[in-house]
Length: 225
Image 1 (cartoon, rainbow, N blue to C red):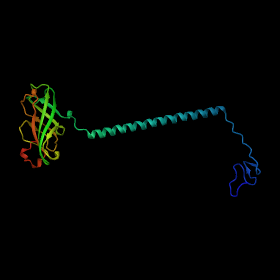
Image 2: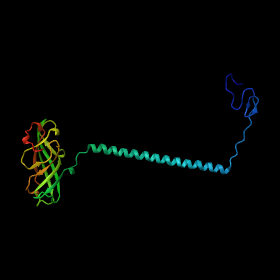
Image 3: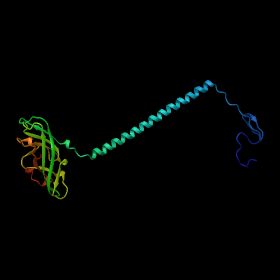
Image 4: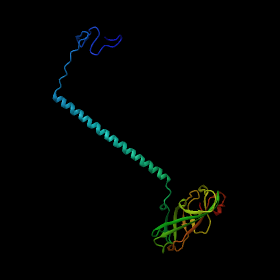
């Protein structure tokens, strides 16, 4: 007995309603509809089409997965390179020199072998003595050396207090062993030329002085431009 308000059972209608054009009485079963007849040739073609679609979809999925993996790897590599590049200090190879003969022409090869300093003073008023050494392949005709260095790559010792301030630095008149050609604002990058006429075969140290109190140093004592 069907509960009140319940929907009719599938395939039957209350009160012997007509289903599919055949009058059915209550409790009678619908006549089974024969399955459609499919040509074997058409069935084979349909199966083949389904298989081809499956292969194409599978290939697209593989390509998509490969592309995503490659993009992710590339992004990680780029990020790593970006973070590393931002934290690297200037390598010693970034300090360069050129050996010059008496006519100012380059001779042989030149290499900066060391840049070191000694520091003293207090915050805002430090002094450093810098020392550079070089190796030249033709010391005989070499008269002077043209230099391009980053002073922040130097190693050194300090007896001073407080931090060094590159924003207020200047090279100072000292022994005349090195003449800057770059600006004070460009420090710690420094360009210039050494004294002429030394015996560069012995690897002598070229000395000059720097202060981080440019604003307090007389302009006449500053050798950077």
